[in-house]
Image (tube, rainbow, N blue to C red; front, side):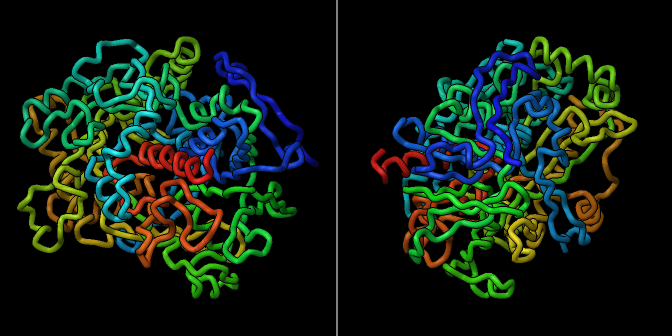
Length: 592
């Protein structure tokens, strides 16, 4: 049975006044099937492209999303409830292959299965990376358009910095000169004070040489420890669904959004060997399939995992690998699915002398209901913020022994090797049964290990094989060890006297720390690079500097898979930046 067109309003569930907007449930509901562009994936990349292209009322766009609507999902809207979204109905719930360097453990891989993609289920951290990250992109692609200076206008178009919900004085917590106040995605500082705020700031003063305070890590110079900025406005998550696909945009008559739709393949158009502007999809687990064609371009924005999955099932990839699965190669492009890069993380939980941590709320259903009611009624209280309080971006000393073995892999001398993520509580769901915790997560921000996405079978509805190949290099493991040791130095400052009760491990030697890492390392859910861009003259890569699939016509990719290198950042903002530029590239190409 075909589902009818449905209407939704966030006010029904959350008491917020939003304009009603129509979303089509089946292709039959699309009155005019003459479409200029079809966009696959409604995450950070797809949301931007759909919004910017339909600014012109003469341009029609169909946006296809595998998941459902974000409307009325409390855990999505309330920032502090984000941990409930992991392994939920709003998550693809991928699993990695056994990771050889981690005792063959498989790892959960969280990706958003909902309008807004992962911007609807992530921890909302707003970080751009270092200026050197983007200058390196420009060097790799031979395109100065990807340099930090030339991307500034796209950073500004994306961001709308807003006051925190408690309207506290933010002087000394960020630099307004490096932010935009009239973009699309809301960005804010902490709106509810944390019990570790003063201790953290005092430590950056007490140990300023090793752990300097950074007024604004989004200035292009990221090194140091600073206040978390997050994609939140008025105490509510500002995802791509709530911003770029918000009511005033999604109601455009030339924008059509098709939910609960799995794309199977992209197809050659009119049997033209290199022209790919058609897409095949299903809404009933493959019982029936449908095809629609864009008159101008097909844009894949399905993310680092599903974009190469779709390409390879379409016969675009390494011919030998495709042949082994019985898939006919239509375009030999061996870099598809390669170069998978992820930031490995260890979430170190320190037992603390406090009851003012996240566990106090998470373990008490009555208290959780009270703070949730306060958020629903006033957009105030402890769940107006994500769980993160501070972030630090730091480097190994120049004389570190690892640099006798490898060249420094960071994008430059002002780009971090590792990240410290400071959380007032245990960053897990469900919360530990007893105890209160301070989580100091340590992550490799400039990793050197590379993995791959490959196909599990010739069935496009089966999940791909995700092999991060974590800790394949000595550098990545060295960084995590040293980051943990530096965390102990940070917490040995006088600011933490009487607060720390026990460390997460008694490990001290490299071998002991390696075993601790092997048992506890995970991914930071920042995968990139599986359809990487390269220069026009490069023999490797999947897309050119304009994000067009090499050797094909009509097919472009706009998501984190095109990153040639992982920036030292949480990845949602770099995707927004890429997508804003991509929108201009598309407009310029078609003169729209």
